[in-house]
Image (cartoon, helix red, strand yellow):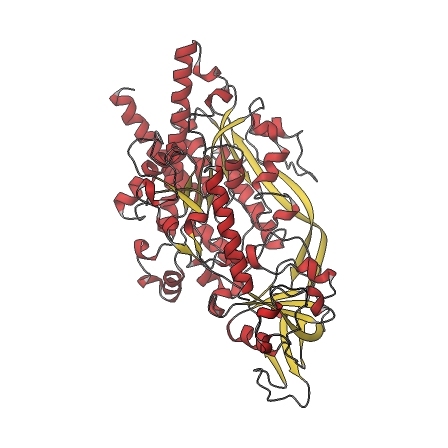
Length: 629
């Protein structure tokens, strides 16, 4: 490439970035999301947001407003008949899966504890009748009649059988212990080259100090309610089978306070249990735990005789009434939007973009703005600069991120789209995905910075001090180098803090919608920052506070970085095609897409023994936490 060509390319890329940011209007988008409040899967607020996002995607792929509305491609299930139409001309497909939706009337949720006559004043922290604040309903637990469900409180330890609370309301304690970051993440060394060669024996990736500098997440001990609820939340299906009337899940006193537990939508990966349940925290949790009877442990329990006598059986005459009213919709819609832009490669080499459209607040679901920005940037470059990308783009916006069991038995919601459309990502199909980006949780502020911004926007914490740490995965060393290049302008301007050592998936898990792509061997760059309030349901009457959780300047810098990253990835794939064409003879646009799948590196997993050691460590953490409750 000549100097003149390089200068023109930089100018075109800067113009494309500007077009992507203009198409997104992140500040306005954040205000709309905050005004809508919580948007769980299939809710009216979610479906209205999907309609609005679809219009934005249409504008992005067309480069202007459509003269007439594009035809809908809605179907009961993922169709294949619309694939050719969506690929061959700009349009946005909407594919829907029907599922059973649980919706609770949050304003009517109530818990009352009552003590029978003769026991008032007992040392259980409960007056004759007292309303106790509920931190949050347990998603997809169950519902009660308007009058609620009433029963005696029975506290169950980890070693107790659910049968001990049959005909009663079970009270269980849930831990939120810190876990070693190396169980969840690993690192790529920060290096100028992208060869990925290092001293860890795994292409340079490691979660041990032996390879040198570690990402702060790897070295830290991390406590997050999302992890805790996934591991330790009570099994409501078994409780219902044992005849339990309802369950009160109490966050352990020192692990999660009332503020941090309020309105958390956790867990969101469980099947519908048809058993009402709620989360308690702080003083409410202490009251319920103290008031509940403790059943005698089974003689068969190996832990029975390790308990002091006062923990073996505690009588109580305290009962509770849990009111959890709502409705069940057996035919709710979980819509997925997808679209594509054709590149110059004639055999379908494709970069995939993914996020999700359902969410609980302005941070948890705003990644669709990234898809709009990248598509608008690519469209701008193709029209204004006559420089279409080499790769096609496939943008997918699943609508069941918060209801994964409705669409997938394993992995995130993006997995359902990949399983339904193998011809759009596997070698030999109409498209072949050679790399991907997953964009979630843009501009996430810390809780403290968000509170300051909501109180007085003019004195909000500066971006660098108030931004939540960026959880940015690169699943190959080549993409780690891409991320460093793409983020560099924002770091130089002081809009974003410098990226630490590049983050890689851990031995057991990868968070976010990039996970299904990584599991299928697709090189993936994924942002999934995780503030403690990430799964907190927002309400329209708290729109200002919700909007303040997003640092718009930081979010726009991340959007621009993702546009640059996609352009960089496209250039790398084109360079590989040119090299292959030079070796084989022929046109780079006709090189088999499957031969380009290594252009961005090959995702590597940690060794079997390291994964096994991590699994054993998790089992130990799980056992200790359960025995402590």
